[in-house]
Image 1 (cartoon, rainbow, N blue to C red):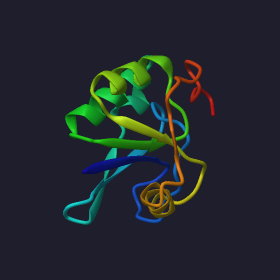
Image 2: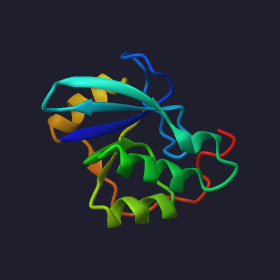
Image 3: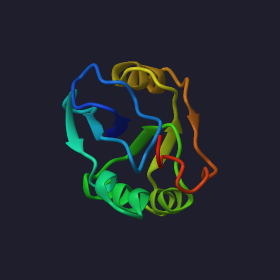
Image 4: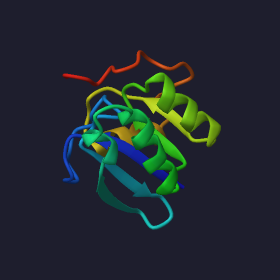
Length: 121
């Protein structure tokens, strides 16, 4: 299983970024290999449709689960159609977010948030 966590930084001790489409990086944890890698969020630089671009990148990276703070309506629909589960988390370290997921402490995102939530934040 591959788990993507939206983050501010590419370092292992980075904090989770509650924005999805406008986060700087996705930290991708490969559960089978127990390895984590950071990829730059392609949606971040989009003038519009950042969530859509980010969601497509998540699909291309073959992600099974996303941990973030919020998902806009378009990103939510794309991830839902691709059967990618998303979980809500606060601003903790990426490592802590992964630990919280494993302990069943995160709430699944079942309703989209507001559009353009990450703009100017």
